[in-house]
Length: 209
Image (cartoon, rainbow, N blue to C red; front, side):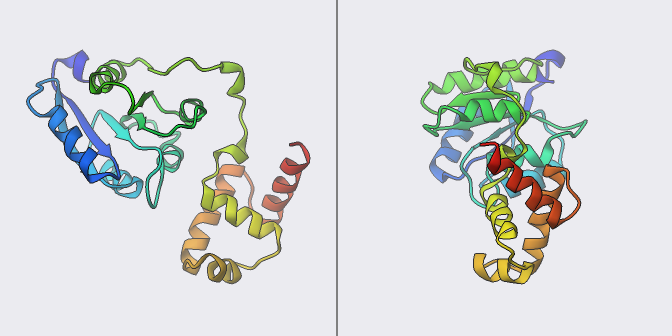
């Protein structure tokens, strides 16, 4: 990557705020260490960019429309090839760095830090290092339910309530195909093959909490 080969680090950004998009673009302009390949407004567009072009580092928000930072990390988790991802957020939730690390992010940087901190984080991540604030690693135990998106949690609760796919689509005001798409992802994450197994997993998780 960039600092290892001597070439510029190719970057793609996923950021919902247009003003911050512009600020980040200006931050990279004129700095020969970086090459801003693309700027996207949400996680879905970021995933599409990953499919279209190679790049070294992705800088993604945590709270984004359509597909948030958690969803992006879950979507690319397990891929052998691809960019290293940095979560760049102003979220006040102190647990976000831990969640990002658990989901496979290579780094975390708060928007409350000076912009130079983001640049340093990108350089470190591009060279193969991980960059996170202090995290109690004993809290990184795997919890499949913790890895679900808010929409997937809604659907799992609806499954447990006995709703059909069509009823879930009507209740959540989404298409039937979208329900099926989310359910497939839900089953994959839980390691189950059907709704009965997913409901059993959900009920067991509630009993142990």
